Length: 304
Image (tube, rainbow, N blue to C red):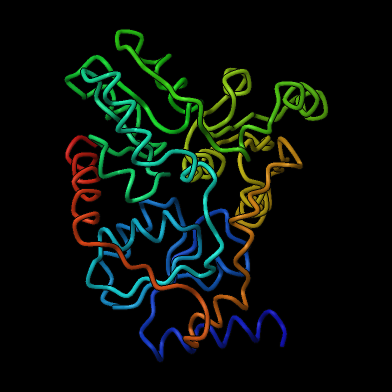
């Protein structure tokens, strides 16, 4: 079968079986083209909670599918590839953070959305990369324990110097691979290009950026900017997506190594087989865990 034939069959099956397909922006273009929604993880979860379909396929990684299930307990949620995890989400567990909370009892624990549902149960509020700054500013407590991404936490802390941040050694290995030397080299190659980076990058990379923001924030900035050249400091699939959506502009990867193997685990045929009901993993959460994790997310919605 050709890519087009597989895409057509997926579209036919999702209509026949009343399935909603979500694709994170880091997915391959052929998957994004057959998705009902494309975007950042939390935004996709919100969209899923609004659709009439009772079956949702998440083309992303495990914590994203868990978030969909947290917000839509009545829906059947399928993770498109069972091995698609997130190293950052798996770096810290519930027991570790409970121990850290004992050491810092007067700190508010802020959890990045890139965490497991179990870990969210012992945190006070959840944040996304686009809402983290706003929410941390609104917190009444001036002492914040930010987990798990120390790079995102550092970027926020520098913008709120009046608050005290405690950061743990965690983060996204894909974004952390990007070096300041690569920034220097790519800027020499493309001196007129604006540098757009994700705050999961190292501080020495972030400080050189013309724009820092979430994945969709980076895409929106590039699409709306009058500039014609951009260096993209996040997962390299965004370079491809922008090249296709803005063919009149030039996009360059900040690092050829900024590739998430977990995001790339899902293939178009995986999605086809999920629609057929012969692949993927249904996400099931203990109701107590779901409700406690949802409280963390509800607080984010309240503040954000």
